[in-house]
Length: 405
Image (cartoon, rainbow, N blue to C red; front, side, top):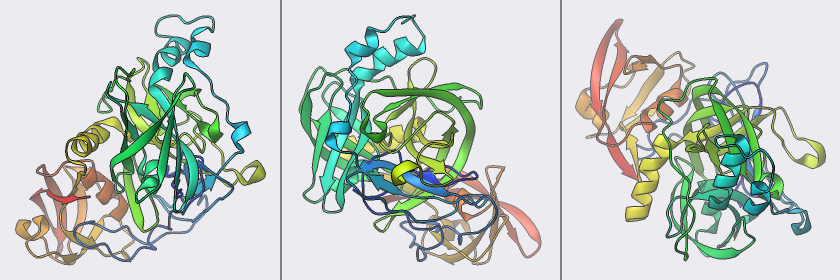
């Protein structure tokens, strides 16, 4: 499988919560300028004290691919894929969780017992390798949300086995994916399935309690807890020619390879994010990167739009303004390079050399932050860009266009 273990900026490497071997995210700035359909390429990687790595949390068979990159303030990212022997995979059933004492309504034990039947383990194989990740059921007729770096490797002839908390399995089909958001939808042929409740990430506050559920290192049914430690953390990761940009929820809940695609829950047991990456200072015992308390999840408010489009059409759209950024510009702000003729930026009157310093009044530190901020919107939304040009500042409204993936 490909190697995605993206997680937010900070002082360490970032890893996708899947447990599998495959590609690696390339360093930020190592990609050639994106065309207008991809929009806004990231600026070059910075080096400095505290630089770390981002790792895709996939667990895969016997391979670890790692590449350095940067996020926001110079945090690096690693992608790791590894696999454990099948004998090491432990299934923890919902019945086992429910049998634990102290399942007081609203307690972590009660939430875990309630959610476990809707959380699945995905064993995926494809031309790029094999691996294990997580996912969760959102409809009684078998639609499952996971990460693109978990399920996307099955595109073009691969296979997906979906394992449930009761020990049963089904063959899954990849409905569609959006690599730019690192999201995918898988479908199984079952009805009457238990589902999770989808919450809202818009009202989250730093310090809110969260619960992560998934299959780290192949250990199905694992539950960890923590808090929201930061919001709107710009995270980038990529692999196999694809780059994901995440305006992430940062958490200190333990997330490890294999957690990718699993749910991040609020204190009521509602899903508020999709676990996707972790930061790490290096590789743990046996070459397996592990949690250092910096995990990153895709906000559920963004996930809902992407998933609805995939379920209804098989593809989804990415909001763009139609520019390439000057990747050599260090910030603050993002400097406009080439503008695509007829694009939203062109229609709004943006010019090459303009410096975008804010979006809807929120300061922009660099190109990566501009990309994730734009991608947190939807095509058709209008945003106000604060632009510096020739020593003067002006606000420019731009209506976002759609690029389909």
